[in-house]
Length: 104
Image (cartoon, rainbow, N blue to C red; front, side, top):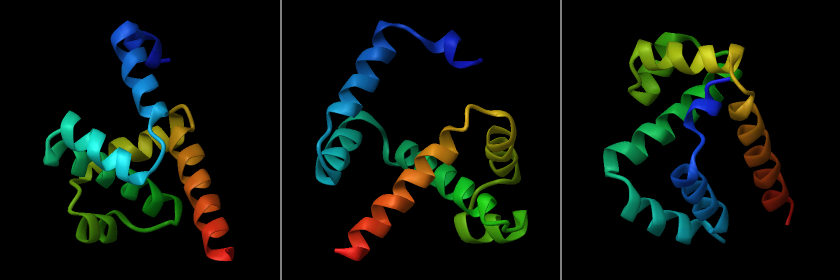
């Protein structure tokens, strides 16, 4: 598992800081301070690529709609197929939250 290579106190601190954020506005503020606009957009793009791959979209459609390179799409697909199931977990949770918000 790749994550074991990353573990350390700095990364623990980062993840704890992210987990401490209470709402969308705090996330925007934190990531605006933490990352460049391009870094934030790249992270968001990968998540959107994962969502589109799960829905069965073609590489061409994903590339056209997101601007992601085929290399990025391939990497995300590899993570979906052989990774830690984190994309699946996060996308499922976002979907549930969206459904709950729509029902209110």
